[in-house]
Structures are given as C-alpha cells and as structure tokens.
Length: 208
Image 1: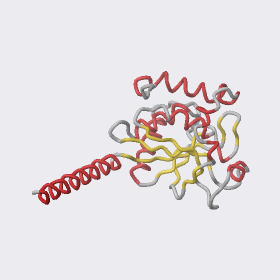
Image 2 (image 1 turned 90 degrees about the vertical axis):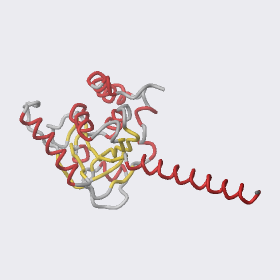
Image 3 (image 1 turned 90 degrees about the horizontal axis):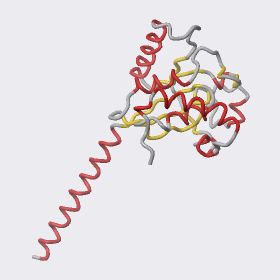
Image 4 (image 1 turned 30 degrees about the vertical axis):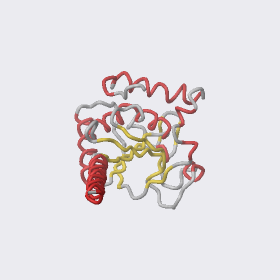
C-alpha cells in the first residue's frame, strides 16, 4: 500500500511538471520580438514600456557589422549601427500592426538620420525585420501612410534585415524611469510619452 501511494504521488508530480512545462511553452509561443529604431533609444524604450502587451523593451544596437559595439563606437556614426529597441510582446494582447502604429506616432519618420537635435546615422528611422512577415507588415503600413498623405515630407524609414542585436550598456536600460529629472528626459522624452498616452489611452498598461 505504501509503495502504491508513492507511485501515485510520483505520477501526480510528474503530470504536474508536464502541465507546468506545457503552460510555460504555451506562454512562450505567444511571445514575439520586433526591433525598431526611431532616434534615441531612451525615447522609444520609454514609450513601449507603457504599451499593454509589451513584456520588455530593451535598448541596444542593430544594423552594423562590428561585433560587440559600445555606445562610444555607435556614437561616432561610422559603425552602421542605429540606436534600436528590441520589443518583446504578447501576440494575444497586442500585435505588429499596433506596434507599428505607435512607432509612426511617436517619432518623425521623414527626417533622414535625425530626430530633433539628435543627428547621425545612429539616429535613423529603421525597422529591422527578422522574417518576411514582419517585412510585409512594415511595407503595408508605410504604403498606407504614404497613400493617406499623413506626412508633408516623404517617409525615409529604412527596412533592414535584422542580423544581430546587441544589448546596450546597463545604464542605458530604463533610462527615463531612472532619470526623470534630467533635462533631456523632461524636454524630449516626456512630450513623446504624453503624446502616446493621449492617443493610445485605452491601450496603456494598468498602473500597479
């Protein structure tokens, strides 16, 4: 009887472990990533951190060729890298269309290699796609924006295949949240967040 009890217990624990594994796998299968560059990554990251469905927004570098670039390397404007943000989102809560709508709302896609006072190829507007689906989705919204004549000037956002994404140094992560009193945060990032919150007020994460 004791052995039978132990066997039943082991089977129960095994099934629990399997169910937990399946649950975790299901959650992971709902996650997707897209990498976007829209000027200073502090701004882009701060906005997406507030979009419902976004699990993480990581500042980093994409589009260049040298390995393990530093902020100082990228800041020269000669590496080919752009300040980018890799966004991981839950496809059951948000989608690529909404991600792109936010992207084209909170930055200017018509200024070549520039966002406000930030100038250089590292500040270019770019979508780094990792598959054909992302590329087609990006082309679709860009063509729709052009057809609707949303902007007075041509859209210069580039579509580039994602080859490698390097996470930026730790002090660049959650920069706005950690430095709200800084002048750049107040004068540049805060207005973008306010615009986002106004236009996507029904899609904001609930404050904890």
